[in-house]
Image (cartoon, rainbow, N blue to C red):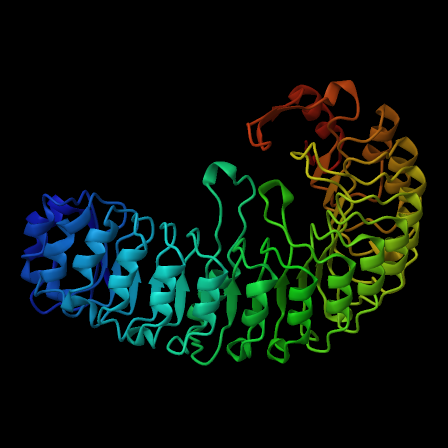
Length: 530
């Protein structure tokens, strides 16, 4: 399909030359469009050739969208994108009456100041062929979402994006158990947060899997493939009926990050027979923004007892206050051996919990995150002696540098010496030991380890190294693949200073770059120093 990308006024002047009368397959992308020139554009007969009309980021407002809704030349339109305009409820009311929606496969209306009243009108429109509907970043609530769930005109919808709206548990449950949206395979309704509060944006697993299936030419019309409810205020009240829905049969990915799920919700998840195909499960949380789950030891026990999670390969349990008791029971789960990624950061884990984890059989695990806990030398020594961790590639025992309020582990030289002597490190590429108590003896042990020949990234920021520790790393004959090393905040020359925004996130940081470059020059592979 040919793409034409122009300013609206330029297209108006050249349309006859750009689109011959016999051309019927055009993707038209226009900028510089407003209520002023939209009427002239919609009178062009050449629009018959347009199959995809992309009008994102223009100045279209309210009822000014009427010429588009009424144009007789857009009856064959299959894709209409109006993101980042100002249609509002008034514009949606006009658009909903358009006969030009009948053949649409894709309708994108993100960032348009649309409220429930506008969506209720849209739900009554002729959208029988629609497969993708994007309403992201609009101030929608449960009333509008329930109208979508009860619309018989959306029975072919396969992808629904409601990211950064105001949807709650009631609206999310209505979509999942809708009697009409039985073909919906990819649903995102993450509540999100204002951009100025987001210093670590989270990816949308539903959108990722949709893109993969689209590239592969696959479509799912029987059940959810991915469900992203990240930061939606579910609580156990709404998590229960969602997780018990037969519509989750075949679901591959479930994101419940920060949904206030507790032990009862964990039990509902663990007992659901419809999640046997689940490979990706995010039950993490971030207390800084009030986006938490609180599984605790009881929730961990419920998950561990599940007989339906045998397909899991990714599990995020960060910020769930599991404690040693919770990890001890979780480590005995029969399905743990399939995991490739396990995130247990921010869980108040100590040495006893690590000792329990070390006894688990985790032959497939390649990424283990134990950062921001209370682990000491004894816990790390126990982990180093583990026989069930043979394929580990990433091991995080550090702490995010931009969260001064967060807890951190207390690993010293003894623990690092035990780790350095362990074959557990054979395949490790990324090792984070930041914000611990590692000194020169620990650095020397890492430098001498015969198991770190694959190591590419090493973070030792905020420890207790001196010149001697640096020199042992520099002289190491084993760290030949090292590309990046964190050494800041160990000695004065590499003292890093952070500058924070009001919300606690880092705005900027700096340290003596000349010293960093001097150290980098001493390393054989010239790794990046930070």
